[in-house]
Length: 308
Length: 328
Image 1 (cartoon, each protein chain N blue to C red):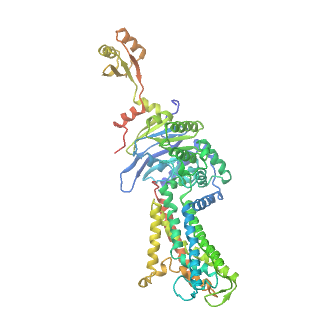
Image 2 (image 1 turned 60 degrees about the vertical axis):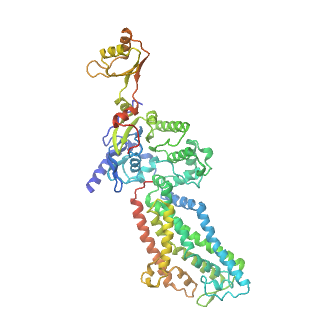
Image 3 (image 1 turned 45 degrees about the vertical axis):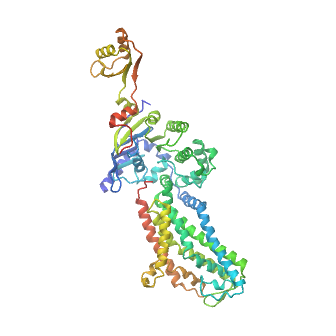
């Protein structure tokens, strides 16, 4: 192989001496900053799709429904602290609207949020392949690694946007329907509303980071097929399967390696002092999934024949 | 058209595309492309001809780096593909197997997206480039419409506009007139001629023989994954040589006279005689005027007299020994 490459190099020089060399001055050089244009174009394209907006609308509706349900129930005179069921923190919502943020994130993190991520990530490469636009992006030339990175950056952006949509919608509904004030943490200490708001912001970021793993899995699946629908369905199906596996006690030996296992650890940010152990395990696990499935997606996508 | 230099298959020649033994075997299948040695000279309008399923599109996909060759080498603009894609592809515009668009974006936004994918495209001049490309293909008026509302012909034009976003050294157009009405076909062919006149090398695949004859200077013919021939269009059409055609009620006399003057391979159908004009040896090619005079002198009543120009289709049939059907 090395001999062949040497031959090629020598031959390339001969070729450059011909007419190709005469035009070499006209070759445009790529500008490092211009390369970012693809990420911007990606994000613009994803967020201009009706499907994306519909997903975000559904996510925004969840806190509204939870808020109204809690409001109706407490207006009936029942005490909100009665039931032990329902998402975490739901009992505190009537006392402090800020808790609707935590309740809504706890309610959407197991399925709604990762499903939305699965749709966007699964469609990322497979959808472009299915519609044929992938071949034109690659011929442009987007570059396979660059395109994959732009896609992943866009999915991560969507993770953050989706989480923020839930959080902001919950905060708005909570402020409208319930009183706001100082926040009593899980550990019993009370912090100011401003401190609580800061922690809510931190929680939103941690929740978004919790989705990095499933985003990488979805992107990998997306490189395997030319059908966007198939990739979305496979990603969401895998998510549901893993969530079920995570509930089966007999499988406790493997559960710490399942990406959703530490998802609800974000609640530990509501302790004083913050209990970092599981939070860090969660972030480490997400980074591991991102590295493993990101590499797999790269290996697959950069060697694949684009025949559609 | 006839003064274009013949293809020189030597490395170091000024070839825009040069492949050596280029082959592709899809997983478990037969060879889709088998040992292709293709040379496309700079400045040519190169017609890549072959029935559907003959391996044209697979070849084109290897040229632009979408598919890795199983064996062989493909060089585009002097560099090996797909390895040098980042340097080569910004100078290549391509329309591959029909246009592909984002249905939910406007025509203008579709072009802006493809432009953003090119790392050598300056974002500050993007909208000017997009407008110029839209103008060039006559889509400026429909630029704001969503692509899903476009007709097939408009989509084809938008695909072509994407290939023309930058000044290109090479345009690869895979069946560019597919799905267009006759008016649209004429416009696309005019555009191809304009681009060629500006110095762009055009590599145009088609299964339409008359399209290749109308716009191309060079051509290559593919069938069942193999290259049957390549050269200038004139050479190829010349290979299937023109024949003499005489229409007369006096076929017997005419046959005798023509045979005396050295016309060979005479065939009579009703009142129409065809024959081979080219004579090997010192006699040289026969003069049509002499033949005509001889016929008249022999009191042969001539209704029609002339040569039938060989078409690429004749050449193709002569090459493949079969009609121009889908390869089985």
